[in-house]
Image (cartoon, rainbow, N blue to C red; front, side, top):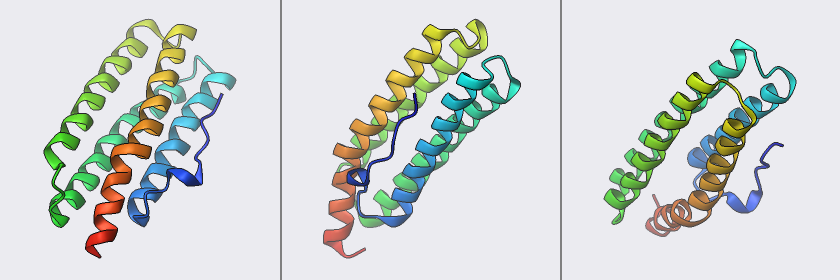
Length: 135
C-alpha cells in the first residue's frame, strides 16, 4: 500500500530532494499505521505531521524560489495553496468519519498522485532553474 520514492523524482536540489523523501516516508508511515492499527491515536498524529511538514516543506521551497528569482513562483505557490486546502479537507474527513477505507483510499490516491505529478513536473522545473543559475 506504500508509495515508493523513485530516484527519477530527484530534482537535483539536495535539500528539496531530502524533504520530498521525508514526505514520502511520513506518508508511508501513516499508510502502514492504517494497515496495522487503523483505530490508533498514532494514525491521526501521523497524518497531522504529514500536513504540518507539508506546510514547512512548501515554505522552504517557496523561499528557495524567491532567493533564485524563479519566474513561476506565484503560479507554483498557488499549487501549494490548493494542495494545502485539499489536505485540510481530507484531515477534516478523517476527523469526522474516522479511518474508513474510503477516506484512506481517497487520501492515498490524492496525495500520492499529487506528489508524484507535482515533483516530476513543476518541482523539476525549479531544479532545472536552480542548477542552470548555479545557485
